[in-house]
Image (cartoon, rainbow, N blue to C red; front, side, top):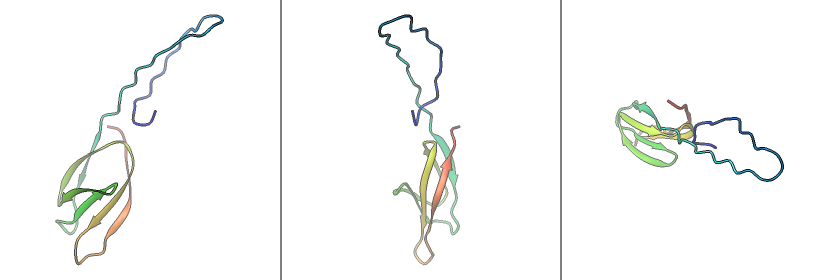
Length: 86
């Protein structure tokens, strides 16, 4: 399941009938990214959420995220970033 650690095991379900197998998944811990903008003090938006301006350490879930950097008087930057677990 996306956002959770992979779990695998072999379970013997026996013969005929129905067997219930429960698997408790562990959620991925957030990864941290360090963002430093040039020019300094530009606003940082990740997934359309404002995270402040200037240098930031931001916790993000693994996966793809949209990134926008904006500052008056400068062209906006928009792109994608990929965060890996750990």
